[in-house]
Image (tube, rainbow, N blue to C red):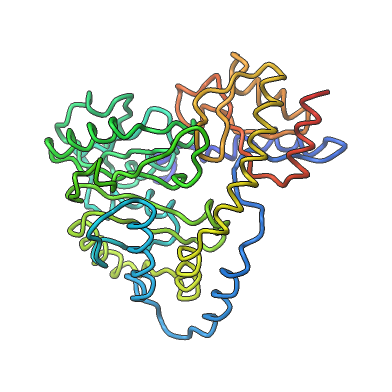
Length: 365
């Protein structure tokens, strides 16, 4: 066994390949609702900003341009309610997955330290703990964890995969507990602008953090809100002391967001119209798929936000994956996100309108 394979779990998406082949064989082609990658065009104003900055022969800075930092702080104030933000409270990253995977290492964690994350969660939280040799710990309620050795607590609201949104009161309680025990909180809020049946709140909101960012950092991405998954545009915001340490480490590691992407990010965060337009697309696809799945005998749980429906037929998830693959529809098995998801599937509604319509029709047959 190689050193890598002994440290890391099997890459989950490789397990889905046989079912993808089945779905691809459908006469009308595959409807891929598994990964959740954006398919709609990058808004024109963002493309224009990228092209205008294409002549960027010099190295970009890890901290980003002053214009980018202005855009990040302004957006955090306008959208998250963060008050008193300065440039020291923000830091661009090369896509949020990179940050999640390497954060424990960059924080200097290792053997004897614990990293906690939700029982149902994005697999990269566990990967990040394993990469640095820390102990990965799952929770239902983080305030019931033993704080001894706990150095990093991941929150994820809205949740991937379930779409669950943590209420403001629960976030406030968790932040207070973490501060009491000296536990650093990183809140993955990449789906915050995609609330459907709930209004997600950031840990940076003054009602949650009390106007102080000590011990808390929020993670945000432009992949979903602006269709920029291909740009790898994301950032973290919060505790200036924590971000200052990360900035120094990331300088040594050369973790620089490309200069044209920095310019595109400024344009994206300065415009709310394209976000509203994209939300409307997703809302329509969500409504169509939710109705079709429920009419077909599925039960939808949580799913009040994000880009996914958390669905079950009360059977093992891989049976459901196989059943839908025969209809040419590919979904993600719930156990990718933890054993607690073993009887659910995650259904993304990021396919085109035409492909969503095809899925709805097949579920109605």
